[in-house]
Amino acid sequence: MQMTFRWYGEENDTITLKQIRQIPGVKGVVWALHDVPVGEVWPVERIEEVVNQAKKYDLHTEVVESVNIHEDIKLGLPSRDNYIKAYKQTLRNLSKFGIKVVCYNFMPVFDWFRTDLFKEAEDGSTALYFDAKKVLSLTPEEVVKNMEENTNGLTLPGWEPERLRDLTHLFELYKHVTEEELLENLTYFLKEICPIAEECGIKMAIHPDDPPFSIFGLPRIVKNKQDIQNVLRAVESPSNGFTFCSGSLGGSLSNDAIDIARTFASQILFAHIRNVKHVGDGSFIESSHLTEDGSIPITGIIKALFENGFDGYIRPDHGRHIWDEVCRPGYGLYDRALGVMYLLGAWDTNVLMNNEFPSVLQNAK
Ligand code: DNO
Image 1 (cartoon, rainbow, N blue to C red):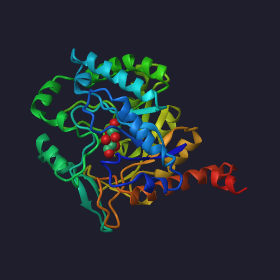
Image 2: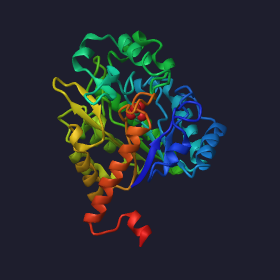
Image 3: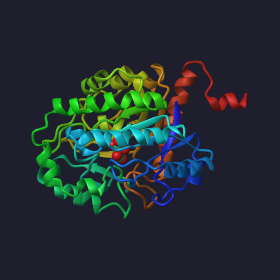
């Protein structure tokens, strides 16, 4: 297991590499060229720039989150082949710098979404919130406005303005796309991409849908255990893997996150760990990582990953906004750093229970 931390880049984050370097146990940053429009090739010089910046702080850049997928690929339009060609070139460019895992998702139109980005919690902190009732009363345009206008002036991952410019048209295009067809389009993409990824030594790690159910009637195909199974079986390749996201899967109480972690441990390339607290009627708030603070058994998940030989990258996922920090929604320093320590503590406990020595003790021996 290797601890990482998401970073949005020198120009675009409130958090510095120096700060990340000082969080115990963090070995690398999870990054992306967020300003390259979806579907365009990531330029070698830009990749090199980020890799060198991180290197100065002894942090690796082996995990990219995300190289986003153009809607034409998800829709299976004839123009998809050009976008797939560009995607392959991006993988080739990334491989020049030792990138090992590329996280991506296949959610139509929206990436993750919430109804509130700074919902006040009982302890006075704020956090991302999904109000199930409110969703029913909002139009897609209102959802986008809500998200885009409440970001502290910072960009949101997966919310590329060029993609969301013409929602009506996009919704029209998806009107007749069934879940089966969406899976076929994903399979087409993976069949094209996996051989190149294999050549490049890169593994593709699909991220679950967040939240893990259909919204506004859009098809969703990575919602639960069966869906994950379908995607992993769609193309047999060591480069076809999975990003386990406890918070996304945990958006539905019918998902058993421990069982999913146990079942797919060897194909989990990357784990995003966070907790959410369900408050009834399908609504949930993102809580601290601590198991007792939410509805997701975080320590049970870590145990399941440990016992089933998980050997991938891991990162604390969204945190709350605490101690008056002004930051990108969900991506502050303090609560995520607390999350790192909790996750490493839980992992080391498993190591000890297994009668081995955590790395820290080994250093001291
Ligand atoms: C939000 C993130 C998502 C995630 C992508 C992965 O904070 O969890 O944007 O990075 O869905 O492709």
